[in-house]
Image (cartoon, rainbow, N blue to C red; front, side, top):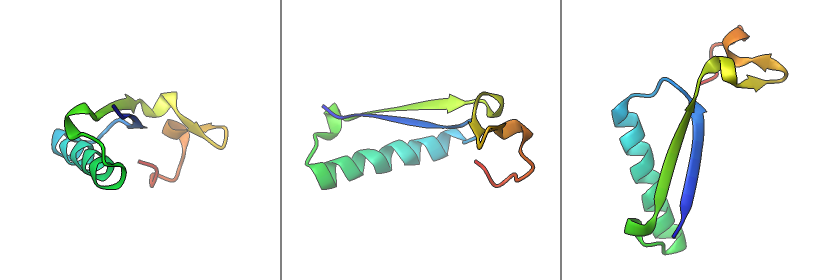
Length: 67
């Protein structure tokens, strides 16, 4: 029973999340011969002011390319 944890910044819409969990599940089935019904994917969304890169909060970064 695979358990996949995805951590990402908040801001994706419901359809993007649906596509993401479907694609991840399909990859586990195709590559690892996992049972799709037993494959769990959890998305943990993190606020930009709760995540940092290079010692700088994402919410404080000037480069808005970070998603």
